[in-house]
Every structure is written in C-alpha cells, then in structure tokens.
Amino acid sequence: MQAIEPETFPWGNRRRFHAYSDYLKQKHGFRIQKLSVDAGFTCPNRDGSKGYGGCVFCNNEAFNPSYCRKTEDIARQLEEGKRFHAWRYRHAGRYIAYFQSYSNTYAPLETLKRHYTAALEVDGIIGLAIGTRPDCVDEEILDYLAELAQCHFIHLEMGIESCYDRSLQWMNRGHDFATARSAFERAAKRGLSTGTHLILGLPGLSRNQELAQAEIISSLPVNTLKLHQLQIIRHTELEKQYLTRPETFHFFGLEEYIDFVVDFLERLSPEIKMERFAAEAPPRFQAGPTFGHIRTDQILQMIEKRLEERNTYQGACFRNNLS
Image (cartoon, rainbow, N blue to C red):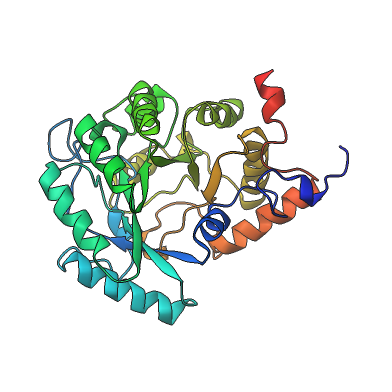
C-alpha cells in the first residue's frame, strides 16, 4: 500500500480514525464530558409489552457509574457527576447529560419533557445524549427532539447490537433490523444526530458476516458508532447460556480483537464518528473470558498503533466495497 500522508485523512486531523471526541471539541470549541443519568426508565422487553427479562446480555449495574443513582433527582445526579469527573479526570469545558440506563424514550411525552428539561436546566449542560431502542421512537417523540435540537445539542443513541435478525432474536431484542433502519431514517429526516452500537463476537456469526456489518452500518444515516466485544456479565440470561454450553461461544483474544477492529474500520464509512472500541465492566461483574486488566484507553492506543503499523485508516476499503 502506498504511504498515507496524515493530511489526506478526510476528518481533518492526523488520527487514523474519525474520533467522536475530536468532532465534539471541534464543533463546540472545548472539551465535552458526558455525565450519565438514570431516570428510572424500563424497556418494552422487560415490562411485558414485548417480553420479559430484557436483552440476554443486559445488567445495567455493570456499567452505571457510582454517582448515577435513580433514587436521586436528575439535577443532583448531574452535579455529583461533575464533581466526580473533576476529581478523577481533568475539568471539561461543558457537559452532555447522558440518559443511559434502559430505554430513555420509553415513556409518555410529558414525562420525557420533564426529565429532559430538568437536565438542560443544570449549569454547564449544553445538550443531551439519549440512549434508547429503535422501536421506542415514534413520530411525536422525534418531532419533540428535533425541536429541542434547534437550541441544544441532541444526540439520539439507538443501540441495535447486531444487523442480523437471527442475532436480534437470540438476544431477545424484540425488534428486527428493518425497525432499526426505519428509526434511523426517520430521525435523519428531521436532522437529528444519531448513534448506534454493535457487539462483536456474537455466537453463530462467521468472521466475514461480522465484518460485513461495517458496510451495513455505513448504509444507514448514522453519525456515531460504538463497538463492544462480547462479554459475559453476571446475573444475566447470557451467563446462564454460557455456563450451560460454553463451547458455543468464541471470545476474541486481545491481539485478535485489535486486528479485527482494524479490518472493520477499513470497511466503515469515514463519515461515521467512532465513539468507543471496547466495553469495560468491573471484575466483579465478569463471568467469562476477558482481556485481563487492559483498560479501554489502552485498547484504543493498541488500535491506533496497529492502524499505523498496517499503514491504513478508517474507510481505506470503503469505496472498493461499494463498487
């Protein structure tokens, strides 16, 4: 492959992938920090609307930060979040309230308005990141979010985890991929910023099938993407399946995962901003093979090093895949 000059990267900096954090800083002029909020929502595959038990992999306690407790009001959670990040990390210029736990559009519109308004009234909050499901955004909700987006930064994060219906069914998602595509298209028509995430290493998929998801995601009007490696989290249906039939699971080794992500990035549209490359849960929640004590920031460094070693970048093969 011909040597690549950093100035040729279409997103305008020397990094070999389109980083969401860089985009936010460039857009707003200062560092942006997300602050998680638990507003006490549930999901339609938990409350019986579509099913019970939730997704097979889901245990929200495994990723909720310590300051994020639904027993406290939203403003207090955000103020505690600001103090937490000021102590643990460097100070951010502004903040985004991240409605993270469960499906944060799964409620009457008036309830959503009350929660979102409470967050936007907190000093330093410039916008919202709203985690939800593609089957929980009707026209009324999308219209309201588009109205909010006229004055605030609004990012709608609709997790799908897989582009394949058989995997969605196995995960007990309660919706198919066509529902996801429709939700992203309807949001895009209103000019909303959207994001999604995929779990890499799901049972029953070949390597080529998993890589093909880069092209499928690139065909959606999606602005950001998070990647997660498959993890077995305690107190989930997935843990029960793993303990019963461990031979049906394949877990990436660390080096294997780094190479796979680089292959995936090469096939992904350079327009899509990468928000995360790996998942991390506290050891007490882990019930299966892991990458050990490697942190997600170290995995990021390894991915950037491998991109440089292979002299490649996000989207390097994207046009070839479309032709």
